Amino acid sequence: MVESITCNLAENALDYLILAGEQAKLDSPRMRKHAIATLADGVELLLKARLEIKDWCLIFKDVDQATRTKYESGDFQSVTFDQAVTRLENLCSVQIAKSHRDIIDKLRQLRNRIRHFAVTTENSVAISLIVKTLSFAIEFVTEHLHSILDKLAEELGQLRTLLGDFAEFVDSRMAEVKTELEAAYCVVLCPVCLQDALKLGDGDVTCAFCRHKADGESAAVEWVECFFGFQSPKDSLIEPQIEECPECGAQACVNVGGIIEDDTGYVCFSCGLSGDYEYCSDCGQLFSGDDSSRCSDCWENLMSKND
Image (cartoon, rainbow, N blue to C red; front, side, top):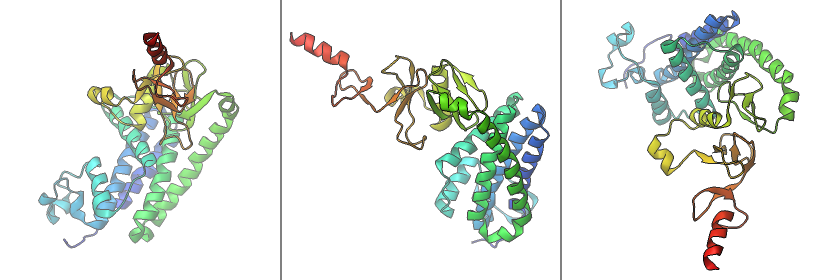
């Protein structure tokens, strides 16, 4: 093991997160855009800070090239996000929950779009992501950076204050749309703001929190890309993430189990209906099982052949 040396990487990570909150508070499209990018950078630095505690060589993309001189001067290519997550799991026994990975992935996607396309971000989306990210950061620091926790007390206090300020906005906004959500036919997590506020079954899909809007089939695509990740055309043919709805026929039926924290199975983003659907043993389409292995159409075809 190479001798440990002092570095302010953890403090720098928290400073980025604090800066993101300060930028968002300025409440302009330009600063909200920068807040999201800064927030994403802060999270990645936070993961690297945990690797540094284990061994500073681990923050090099190529650990074989790690030298103290390069480390102290910053003259090296640092570990990628995916490498950092893998090293945290394999070398530090640090597991990042799926719900937290969804948040981080959303941030990184927005950060990349912002830097390459100069997109703007709605205030409600920015605040929602900031609240969820600060919650993750506070939990990560207290659980995985406990060996240097005393050195981070001031920054951690600032994060908690920011979280309280922004959480008030989220709570207030959710209170405003509570009646709207209660009247909705079906509600799932929004792939844009990550709040449990995406309304299905009342025409176009709309998020009550951030007002993101899409048709049912487009919303289904957005949802699986956010929560399940990219799927190649070949894989989508073998194991599709979006199915034809047995009720309305739209290509918008998704098995949300594992993401939605209840017993919900398949949900159609077009009509809003849900159910414990099964695959027909003959045609391969989803249908309501009813203790049968065949859908009604295939039963009718089978019976007509036997007549």
